[in-house]
Length: 240
Image (cartoon, rainbow, N blue to C red; front, side):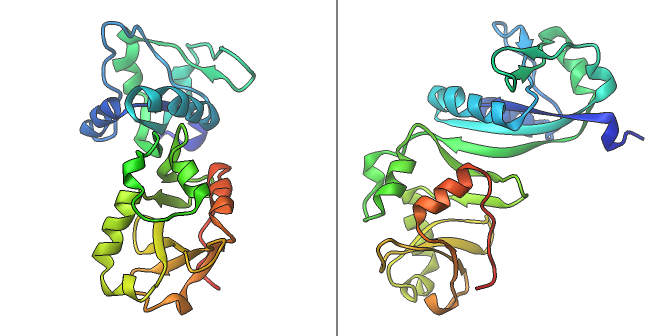
């Protein structure tokens, strides 16, 4: 049986088309390279994978994903680690003709760790939102969803998704005057701005909440939330 110490964690930045093929495989293997792709490039840390996803995949296709997976350490010993920039810019070069073999040495599932999106169009901003939030969503890339470093899962909403969710909330939205649901945990917990205040604090509200009196503070303002998500230190506080 292969243990954790017998594997090495790798990351790969990718676009939507390739991720869809990975999903179709049951999250077990990488698809064959195209004719103009002689090398498969997994990288050795999340920082580098994130950099490529945000700076290359997002501009190229509007979305960039960071994936993580484990490979048998013994199999990787035949390949040299390639340093192609600074000390953290590290990757393996797997020839396309050996990718099928490489796939057989992946241990467990390939995990979609984070997703980044490109700038949100002006047309989506039909209701007032803090300037700092708008600036973030209209920057080169923004954190759409994924797992942060402490295993916290965060999901952020575009303005269109925010309005759709608030419409679906119905009476619960009415019970929270000035609410702007900008994200959540992908389940019941929602990250909401209380726009009655300036700056608007970020609060945690439950889908069944009856009003602001049960909301739990998460950040002083949206700028603090953005900073903590970007540096991977945000986690949900469920107690006031």
